[in-house]
Image (tube, rainbow, N blue to C red; front, top):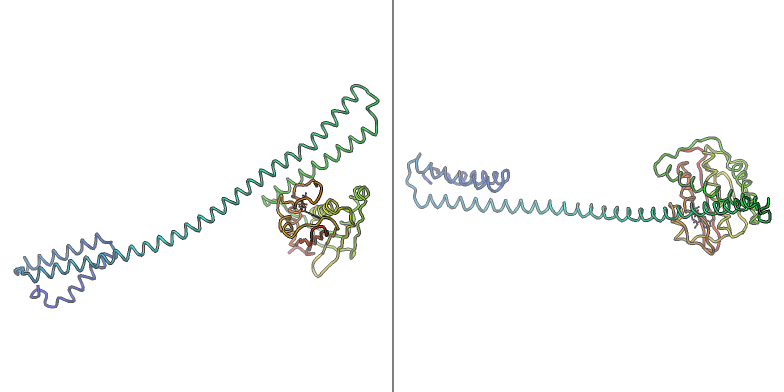
Length: 344
Ligand code: ADP
């Protein structure tokens, strides 16, 4: 072999490079094939073309080449396994992250489904109660009229039934409107009709609409204001926000005076409403703007779905504004709404 290939070292190196390239490009089987071809070729060149006798040294050199090639192939195999392992580890991490995300999504979906089921059961209960009351009232009245029992039938009694039914219908209507608003918000279909709106005039008008309740529950409401505070706002939606804040102040205010301040600060119209009622714990203050979330009642059940503040906060957000609460248990609550006079 030495006689045929006098400078055998570069040749061996070339062979090894070929084997290594085959291992790198084609994998171990192609590298073994290359080794076999090179060994065979060397053997054939020595035997047939150069007509040299195959001595032990040449055979040893072919064997040495084959063994070295096998080692090179094995090392390539190990290296590629290592790469694969790294790739697999990378994938494992990716799948682990995806699994955690999926698990979180699943947990949040379960929470949402539970909240929806609780909401549905609460809504069906709330919808059924006024209907049952109205049905009962109508039933009693019709029995009285049918039996022409004048002892049981009187105009004041009829007026009481009608008033009660009117209240129940108002409650039903407000609940249905809340449900419609939720659907508009969650499907992104709520839109604003912006027009010059005076926050002070609007608040005074809303206070007027509450006059009967305020008188009945002996509430005092004071409005301090710059006059007027005008901005490009959706009048009807703002009416909804203020009505919700005022009715909450009445509902949770324990009969203590309510104070409203309206003024301009820079480019914002500011509306604050402060009651001296039951207040909200710090922990619950973070929840009450979420859908269907209510703070625990502080003495006595208060009717509500936990929808009003969610809808209000979404309306304010759509105006580019903010709403925040500051409160302490049994020390009353103060809600502040900040509205840019020109929606950005
Ligand atoms: P609800 O119909 O339950 O009143 P809201 O979304 O308007 O729904 O309010 C969410 C919750 O925030 C209420 O259930 C109540 O626990 C709390 N809350 C709102 N306003 C006040 C307030 N002025 N004082 C005390 N708690 C309040």
